[in-house]
Amino acid sequence: MKSFIGKPKGKLILVTAITPTPAGEGKTTTTIGLADALSLTGRKTIVAIREPSLGPVFGIKGGAAGGGYSQVIPMEDINLHFTGDIHAIGAANNLLAAMIDNHIYQGNSLRIDPRRITWRRCMDMNDRQLRNIISGLGGATNGMPREDGFDITVASEVMAVLCLSESISDLKSRLSRIVIGYTYDGTPVTAGDLHAEGAMAALLRDAIKPNLVSTLGGTPALIHGGPFANIAHGCNSVIATKLALHFADYTVTEAGFGADLGAEKFFDIKCRAASLTPSAAVVVATVRALKMHGGAPKTSLSDENLSALSAGIPNLLRHVSNIRDVFGVPVVVAINRFPTDTQAELSLLRSTCAEAGVDAVISEVWEKGGEGGIELAERVAELCETKSNFRFAYSIDLSIAEKPNTIVKRIYRGVGVEFTPAAKKQLDKIEADGFGKLPVCVAKTQYSFSDDAQKLGAPEGFTVTVKNLRVSAGAGFIVALTGDIMTMPGLPKSPAAEYIDIDANGTISGLF
Image (tube, rainbow, N blue to C red; front, side, top):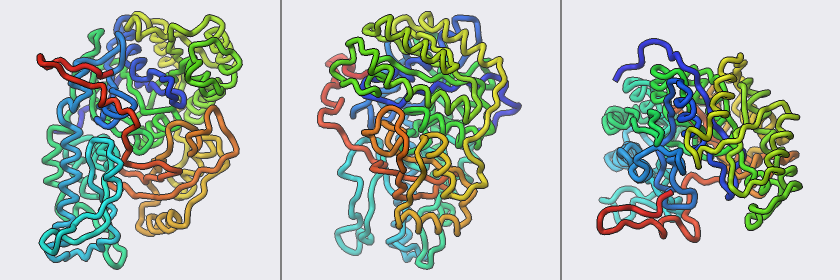
């Protein structure tokens, strides 16, 4: 598989959202509906989005194929392992894990320190029981006992590597640079040192190819890659995005969770790595979610509440300001309309946005498909013709410590970062090993600008605590884990899996 010949010719549109709430925002639905609306207006359009992980499908969030009349199809297949790409990533990840422990068992010529292995096993399922384990029990023939653990597959560096690679050659090169741990004298050991990159790439031969499906409205859709935005970089693959840009005049893509997570990483990591320049951005919001940010309880979100809405709107405006003023990208707000929204609430939201200098367009793509997004499509197309002064939130030349500090101050609007003693040691080690010029991927709660999920709305004056730093040399970034974030989620008290079923004819129910 060769890199694309020629430069991308289309406009790149990012769909992002306010800080997520249990009320729902509808970012993927809006992404698909906007693409269908652009197609209906005669514009050659492709939508490029991520593949769903089984973790949220069987957990609390549900699938990621859109909803209503703005879906990609076949929805059931897409939400249930689809073409097996994520399983291939898990296999490549676990092959490397097996080769690490086998190398130690067979004599350990690289002198890998079992206490300093940083590579973890993975599986595409929420399973808190596997976060921290002891492996290699059962005697000498079963390996060396050591502390181990599992991440969810979408948090694996292999996922990030695949999503940022532009060819098989690039994939192999990135895989070889993965740091798996350290020797007894502190020297980094890579997958290349274990000669693992060739076999890993062979497992990913088909997974690196984008998957072509369609929306309900007939718009081509490329679904490829699925890193989470709260624990990884949250964007679909560079290959799929550039393929769409090459063949379409408009490419509509999305980034995970709120704009403080997915959009920031889309701009600062993906666009930086792939030399992409976005033409416009859409921030999706709902009246219901903004009322929740304003203090309204979930049980009363269907009731008109102008005071709660007013109190919650600053969350939306902060995301808008970040995209427009920090990153320099033209932006519009899409109000994903619910039947319970009152005219007074919609008018208040639109007028407040207008006062802040941003248009807010009502979107009804869930109910009407592309027809419900025509006004949004026209406004987005207009923005694509305006000048984008795209820039990154921070310089790559900043120190490792300064990069998350800048993100917290400029994007989250906190006062700065505090590193735990353990994180400070990791920081010094990463700098000493020569990885100081990499961008930073902040892993934090998706429910707040801060690292505290309880701080809704637009909090200020907080400090973000970095507890752990991991170098992802193959992906080309450093992961900063903050607050209570974990790379292996758990299932909720009542997981979605309890309501998913299949009948005697093979018809699946309960997916959404």
